[in-house]
Length: 140
Image (cartoon, one colour):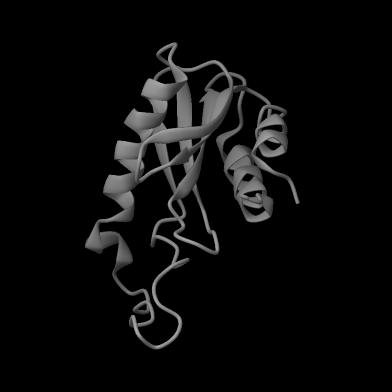
């Protein structure tokens, strides 16, 4: 089970990968980064993508049809309850940005951000592989 650094190295092996980060979407802080950043500043990119992730994760419209999380006080609480969204994909003329939410045992407020070159990358393959990596990621 890979940690953040190993996971980011794996992400960068995807064809067309330009840069990647593990980001806490509640604080907007990058927990780890690799490669290039779309605006040249990994910390600013982390904060900007965290805004997008937070907006998607907190919208009730995306949770429609999902079972309610356990009520607090029944011994399980809501810690570790994943957001209703698996990933967010933003397309630009030059690339793709995939934000893949990572389920954790604590607060599930982390996502993987992959910046993928549109001409060299395969969006479908990258999305599948990013999901696999998110499942294996160990945050300590």
